[in-house]
Length: 190
Picture: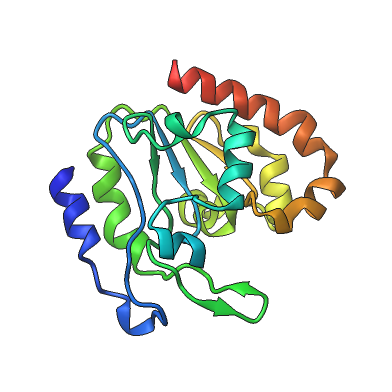
């Protein structure tokens, strides 16, 4: 695993397309129990090199009910985005994750993590990649049907503060999805 992570840290496959250059941001360990598959690092994370080291990460840890020590312990939780580097800014937020990373690295990483008990798919890019044809027409419907993907995957919207409006419109998320999510996290970490 160490060798693979070193190889990934030196990856420059997408660099010609990255305004701020390549800086792969992820964590993983052969003993990881939970894998969180997000979208791509934002600019704050790109600069710090700390995965989920922003307000979205604060929200995610709150949803999970885990402290930073647990969250950043790769023997507990692997943090593997669809795109490992900051893709740059688009018209309405960050650009989508680069498409090269997941096919190039995910299977290699996951093969080296035999103790994973729960894989969390955050946002439409990870859900489309891992769920294929079983993904619903909208992210809202995919998340509403979260139990269809268990026990293999737990699907979530992105925890960005930008999604507070979505959460307010979809109260069922906080009432039905989050409690089950927290139960599954405790179970996986036990």
